[in-house]
Image 1 (tube, rainbow, N blue to C red):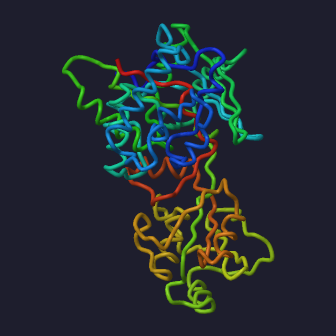
Image 2 (tube, helix red, strand yellow):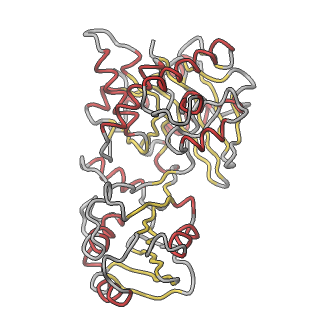
Image 3 (cartoon, rainbow, N blue to C red):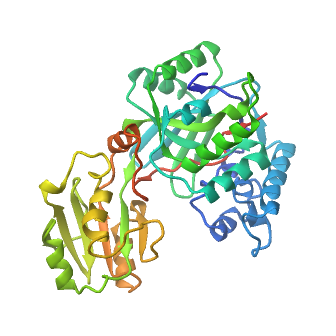
Length: 408
């Protein structure tokens, strides 16, 4: 089985992409989605967040929610605002956020290669979130939320994808957040074969975002599998970017209290593992091993002492160093997934959000981190390990609704 393959994408009809494209299902609350979709009957949020069309007190995991998603998809198909390509295609997907541009390939990725770890993971998944995605896929008989993948440096793959992204795009949407999404369609059989062959030569692909979507796709494929028969469910919807184009932002931490320490006691204990310097300005960590700390209206720069950094791909991550030397031993936070005293702030919100959370009294202290790098993510995945929770914040985000994968 090929690592990736072309497929008959379900896409907005000409002129409809702007009315359909929507943020990913997992970045908006139900109330935010309801407000975003108001007055937009073809917004893909009616499929990805179908509870917005039901009473507010509905359980978002109830059977009627998934049934409503299927009903809304059927309406869009009947109205002709979503149409399906006649033959298998690859698609180029370009994201533009300010000066940052990345161009990737929309493809159906192999579940078998996911199961064998050729498509590599770096996060644990939660069964309840997997269950939600399985039920959504089964209700729609389609995968509508793409998994964000990365491929290791390949000038050949870069050139083949860039060659698709020429001329007028089939879809060109600038979202409310200013991110531009462009889609081009490749139907040429010889060029499709060249792309398939080029990706087959790669040793691995890497999941950047979408661990629950890929895990759910694997479960659906296993449930539908028939010996000797390849089915659409044996592949999952993905957008694959060159790893060097992908942008990871900082993923910062805020903590409710100092675990019984006062400011001077915390500073003294920090000095065991860090060089601590006061700063008159916000501290944007300039390199790995540097941290900003905002406490009592003041910023400090923390620099980890060199002897504490190991070669281990997980332990050497800044998120691990902060947990190992601050969050755990000083602030008493051992379980980042379950401890209610800690919260996480994506770097897209900026350091002003950290100051706001602390100055309001909601939180006692904030920590700004240097972003995890793609080579670090890949090293963790290659070592068959996982990262600590909330290690990566990818921007820009993919849109839902521009290309979906039907499982017929």
